[in-house]
Image (cartoon, rainbow over all chains, first blue to last red; front, side, top):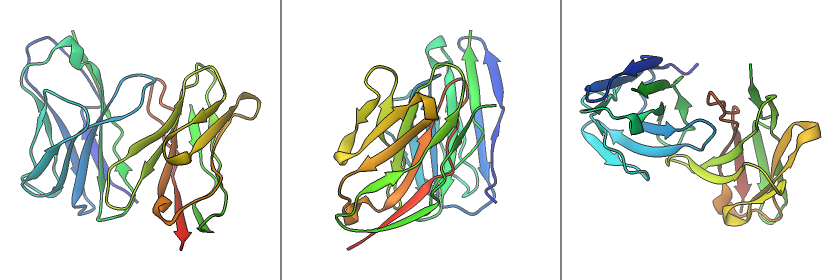
Length: 111
Length: 110
């Protein structure tokens, strides 16, 4: 059974605040990903990591940053949130060539 | 609650065979439907999407899908598969909340 956790599930925050979205997996997966999804729209890859201390930007430009200090942890940070960051953020992980396992997502609203 | 069902968990085909992967959704509102592909070791990529209009949607790499509202289906098709189509295929219906199917592993034998 896949175990990948995202917190918080929902977040409403004011403009200019710094936020960190947490993502952890207990499966020892080497690859982790962050996707952004607006309601009713497709996923966009914003960051990915193929291992510890390895991070890359995805297909969609994002003002967020990520870190991968531990295998199981892949947090995403926005230094100064803006209303344009309002979206759903999905974390996923996989091991080598195995299929992705998704977290339940964080729905972010910036007011 | 909305759900997306993919009934084929693993499909094995020979090259040049035709492909059809089933996807059924249960959602009563505006339906946006997607097929994604994940090649071994890579992230998800969008194959095709349906928002409205022509129910037959053409995507990349020769894939197409047909939205049949009466059957709540959005099956993925390709007339002739190639070895390079070996991948995991996900149907998704992201409306208010992302909903993915469980995926179908396609293996194409050379």
